Image: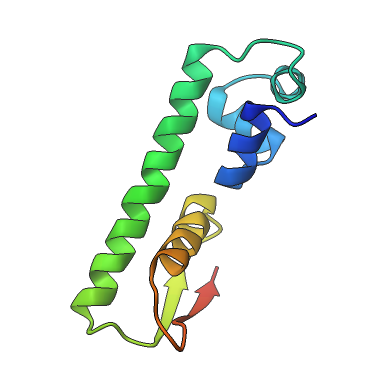
Length: 108
């Protein structure tokens, strides 16, 4: 059965290993939270909220840059391997209602 914690990790695009790094916890601890064997502490929820806020802020910055550039059809985004940048690009793309869709080319 999927837990709320596991669903949040999936929504944020975080692997359990990445979540362990985010929380400063051991991987087996995160695994226990993900399957519901242990209660997720308040601090871990705060970490996830802060991580999501970074994604939203980055997505909003992308939208502002896109609007300032005249709502261009093709964009190139440097992610530098940053998962927050990748999730922000996905959030931005899903938030705009353009036809034909905006094309985003991701570059590491």
